[in-house]
Amino acid sequence: MMNTTDNGEAKKEMPEFQSHKKVWALKIKEITFNPSDSEEVDPTEGVTLIFEEEGYAPLIVDAAYRNKHEPQVGGYYVVYADGYRSWSPADVFEEGYSPILEDKATPPEVVEEKLTGDDAPPSQSRVKT
Image 1 (cartoon, rainbow, N blue to C red):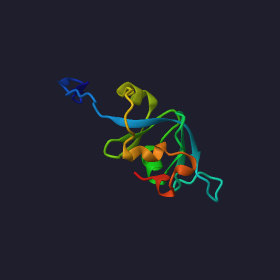
Image 2: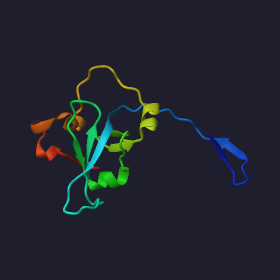
Image 3: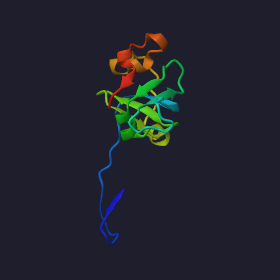
Image 4: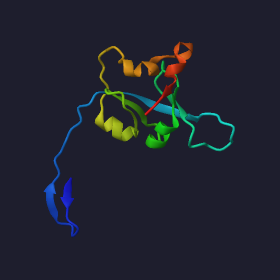
């Protein structure tokens, strides 16, 4: 990508980088708004993310996550190695990441996503940004 001046002349090409991060991610199949007393969507309420991959419980994310990342169906819920949680559009995510097919232990930061049904402790049912 070229950096240009106001008159369109090229100055210098920007340095190029390639990602080498390892992340954990699930593709979002559905987003449900958490019930409230109002019929309208409340921006102070979180949402529940339902994933395409089987074996993962729906995940409630708080309003801060929802408002910051604005997750959408078809995109990915992403957890980085340092625990930071984000959202990525499918095309961007799939262009930048390939699945790691080795069978490795689930890191503690994402155990809450693995829990299903009654196994999920209430303290792990919400995600903070």
